[in-house]
Image (cartoon, helix red, strand yellow):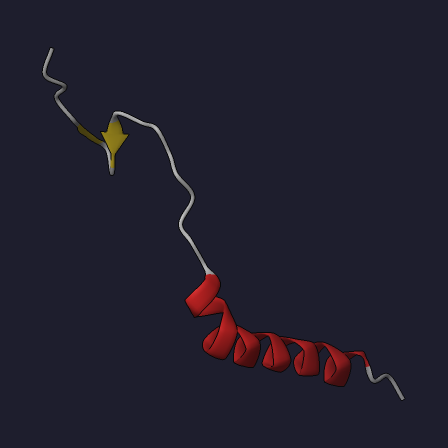
Length: 46
C-alpha cells in the first residue's frame, strides 16, 4: 500500500499548525526598494 498521500498530508497539516502558532509571529515582510506599488506610480519629491 502506498502511504505517500498520508505522509504528505501529515507534513502539510504539521506545517500549517506550525505556521499558525509560530510562523505568523516570526514572519517579517521583505524590504523592497521600489517606486511602483500595485501598478501605481509613486511620485517622488525632489
